[in-house]
Amino acid sequence: MVGSAVGLGYDTAPALVFGLAVIVVLPVLLIGGMMLRAVAEGEPKTSRVKALHAVPQTDLERDTSKAKQKSSAFANAVFFVEQDADEARSGEAHRFVGDQMVMRIGRESDNELRLEHSTVHRYHAMVQRDFENGYMITDLADDLGNGVFVDGQRISHSRLSGGEEIALGKAILRFEIVD
Image (cartoon, rainbow, N blue to C red; front, top):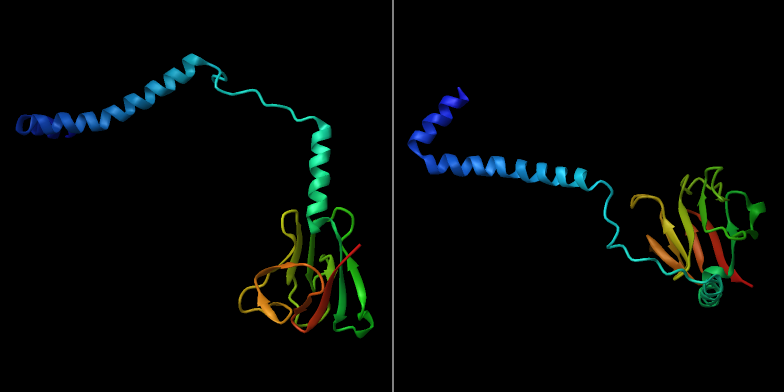
């Protein structure tokens, strides 16, 4: 059936049938040729790859120490709980420990900073150390949630430099950079 249709088409418009055949067959031939060339060459050519220059360890250490001096991410940071459901926790301090890079804040027990207030989401906010920007806080809840407020302004993410009051629902925290 296909053969008779092609034969009828060739009798009526040979140039059209030839053009369609080229459009269908040419890509198959090109792909097959590339596959054969890849198999015949075996291993991929590496002559285009330049050798990597190794940086001496002492230079790396010097660069890291410069970054530590410039970035507030290396400074010690503390969250003070100012207000939570449990009033006995007022003034409680939660520190970024050692090389900790992330602190999650929320009601769930697996958060690094757990707040028990009913207006705090299970996973409400996250604070990250960023070597270029210092400490950054991000709201993990959606736009319909209780939000994260830094010094009275609702944020989706914001840089923290120390001294900010952070409201998560009705829980209040104070962020400080300490030496």
